[in-house]
Structure formats: structure tokens, C-alpha cells
Length: 441
Image (cartoon, rainbow, N blue to C red):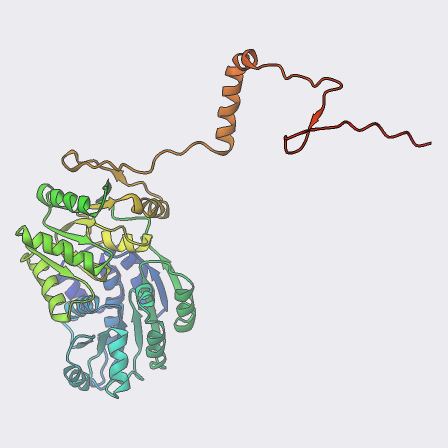
């Protein structure tokens, strides 16, 4: 129960109003430590409830402030506009019975309007690193009174090249008392370097590792001969699977536009989302999907993180993602909050090794599925000849079985006659035998 946490009564009232009853594992582990003011480094998969795990302790720190609102007290950094917008909504929901105000700074919005909002000095500022730095450089942003920093999806921010921006923004908050870093993966050397620079003796929490995907999500692969065959399979799945909303992921913008064009031509209510789309189009695509105006979203990995849509129960990987982590983020869109979901990956000859490496990474084996109506000829790599010990054992057994026959057919090798001439090395003319040299005395 959330009442077990030492949260302010106004926050507990909001929690009850929102019908939050049982905390998720990441909330149960992180909230008590965060309330103590500890620096946290939390690894938790997408959809595990980690937003509330940092929002509630952050608001609890600010709820009883007696000072007038003249400084920004909390800063939340996120990699994408969509994720920042969703986090703002969560902060507003949990702070509805308090006087705490939050503001949003992201790219794609009017710079002057954002500067005007900053002059009102929100208690909590949520934003993406690039635009925040632009406002900082313009003299519109002052962070010297920030008490708490949250770095959400820190691994993704590093992947997008925001490492230096994040570090600079943290350095602009010299009086901060607490820093919390959340990521969906354990990350590499870059993430470890960031942790060493921005966290002070952090508590490490490893929850919901990427190998523990949502139990309600079935993971299947369907083999395909080529991209046109993949498009036929998608058509069949959209016509025959039962789903409320679906996402089709591609690795390239060109392919996303191509699939979207085919779907629209067949009168599907669909939208496409990728990096070439401006903020207005991106907002429209996500809102239409949430409200049910569109049932299908075709997207590149720009939508793999931070997309929270109820009723999203079908994910199709037209292209296999390039890493196990990205695979997790993609299919993490479905099977959330105990609901069932289906994730289908379409595998051509060039995708098989990548798919196998992701299976090994997740320590799982995907369900193989065949759809007879659109069955192709490719079914996976051909079996190769046994090698090593296995080949040696088979050879010995074969030799034992065939020993008698081989011996029976084998012709005796003719021994050379004592005085027969020897062949030369090139086999063209016989060589004369040399007389033996006299023995040494």
C-alpha cells in the first residue's frame, strides 16, 4: 500500500484519487530510499512504473516549501519530447492537491513562449537537454537553486549524444542535494562514466532486468523471403489478429513511409512517426492513436521509448532491432499493467543471426510461427555438416561399418622391382640408379 510510505498527506490523497493501490517493485524499492535523500541509480524496464518512483519523492521534498516561488527547485531531464510531455502530465496528476507548478522545455516549441514560462519560475522544470542548454545560453534559465535532479532514460540520452549536455546541466546545479538516475539497461562505459560524475555514493537498484519481459507478452517470429513478403505477412496479421491498437517498427524512415503508404492505400487508419516529422505531426500521430482515431502507428525507434498508449496489444517488428535493448523497448509497448500482448518479428535470411543474438541476450527462445496463407520458402538457415568431435565420431563409426568392404575392394600395392628405374620428380623420364658410395675406412 502507498500509505506505508512517509509521503505528505496531499500526495497520498492524489495517489488515492488516481486509484494507485499496490506499488510496483521499482516503486517499493526506490521510494523509501529517495525519501531519505539518497542518490539512486535504478535499472528498470520500460513500463515498470518508474516515473512515480521518482516523481512522488521529488514532490514530497517540495510540497512544504514556505518560500515564494522564485527559483526552480527540481530538474528532470529526458531524451525525447514525447517522454517529457508524459512526465509533465504525471507530475501534474500527483501534485493536483498541492501548489507545486511544473514547466516543460523541449525542442519543436516556440522559444520565446518557453522563455516567458521560465520567467514565471516553475518549481519543477522538465525538459530535453538540447533545448534546455539553448535557454541556458540565452540567459533565460537559472539552475543554481535546484535541489534535486532526475535523469530519466539516461542510457537513451547517451545513445542520442547528450552526454556532454547532461553533464553541463548537472554542473549548473552546484547546490543540488539529491540526484536520481534511471535507465532501462545497465549501459556501457559511457553510462558508468556519467554515474561517477553526477552521483554521490549512490544506492544501486537492479529491478525488472531486460531479460524479464512482461509475462503477458507472447513473442513470435515468422520467417519471410524478402521485404515484399514481409508486407504480405503484415497485411494478413492486421486483417486476422485481434487487437485494439498496433505499432509496426522499422529501422529506416524510408521503409516506415513505404509501409504507411501501403496501409493508407488499403483504407487503414494509420499514422507514421519518425525523425523527419515535425513536432505538430508527431503530436497528432500520438494523440490520434491514444484517442482511437488511428489504430496503427508505423514508427522508427524514435517512438520506442516514452510512448505510453492504453490498449496497445500488437507490436510487429518489420525490421529486427539492432540490439537486445532496443528489442526490449519496442515490445515493452505491449503487455503492460498485466494485460496480454503479442510481439511478432519478421525474419528474412539477413535477420536470422541478429534474431538469434537477441534470443541469447534475453536467454529466451521465441515461438516459431507459420501462417499457411502467406507461407514462404525460407524457414531458417540450412543445417551445416557436423564438425569437430561430432564429425570425428561419425567418421569412426562409418569406418568400422565399412572396414570389411573397403579391405575387400582394396588392391594390393605393387612393390617396385629391385632393378626397376625410379621416376623423376616431374614424372617425365626415369632416373638412373646411383651406385652406392664406398664405405668410409
